Length: 349
Image 1: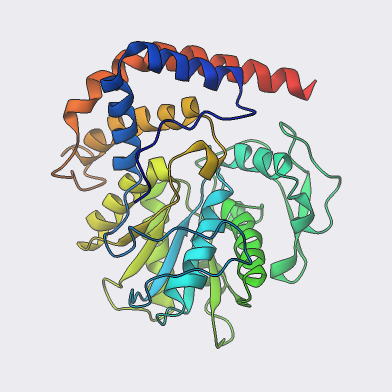
Image 2: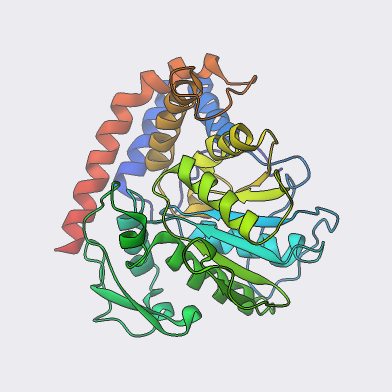
């Protein structure tokens, strides 16, 4: 574990993030500690992977555990580019050396997809998608992209999120899993590990038999429950691990805990969870945005674990005692996020 840290305020932060920090600092040390504890609790790592950190550069050699054996790595779609990049590092440094050859990237088109397109533009990563109608800007995703890892397949970009769209219709559009594939493959190759695209088993069957590391897509899910359900179906079609395969699961840090609890609910087995650190330097998101995710998750987990929903397991160590601090902080979060929204809009004009 890294040393105790603040909410990472550094050069170039937005005025809103600086405001968040000043409010926290003026409130009390206990409030700051509570917020950090919530973020760390949500960004759950299995004890066998708790110490692993991605290298600071692709060329850096990395000492990592080599005995973490899993049947497959499953990476959940989200809006953070750091997630597929970190998952690729985990695969190269830890899982593949220990014998894992299969990766499933899961995610259709949902609320997290528009900000994912924005972050790709912000990070100047549009070239990974080959030909597109034009290099896109934040707030204006492309009309279509070419997916080089899928043999130059061209897909249109869905401009309006529709959570009720039929699976077959959804697969015609570029999904979070499609985007993650380009990022994951590029990172693995940059690290010296070529990987092959294995197809979308739920849509196309298992296709040709591949040797070596291979990456599969699941592109019809629109929320965590179907991410897990359809990923399990994908693994079954690949003949991996029986009823409850041993999987390593990666999601963005604030959603990691609930994602793993959902896997546990559906399989009866706790997955080998890992995620990037919940800091601005790791994920490129402000303290305000990270804490806003955290507040939402702290409300969702008990609600989704309740008997009337029963979507995930209720963890025995849920930090109920930290909720009052987050709730007291909510007005400052709302104000800071509004400032960030206005600053982004102004920057696009």
